[in-house]
Length: 76
Image (cartoon, rainbow, N blue to C red; front, side, top):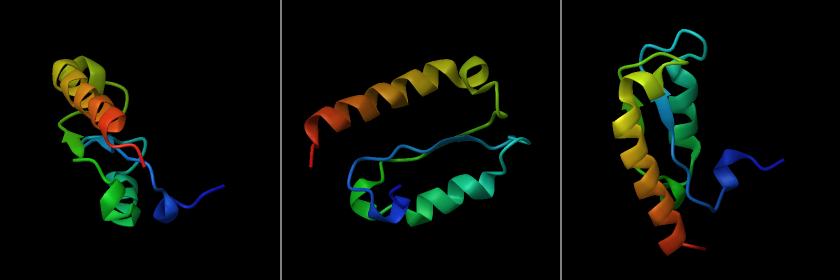
């Protein structure tokens, strides 16, 4: 298994700021561990663990679309 510090593909972190299932510090840990060259702009939203799509669905789709386009145009 690869450690996130050695990832050479783009990484997109999405996390709800109100998540009570997985603490936000886990997302921050991933964020600081991913090499800068691989980190896509983060998406922290005002939502919990299971309601990001309900509360932030339109915003999330825009960001995921941008990430997918980025992945297609920035292949290693």
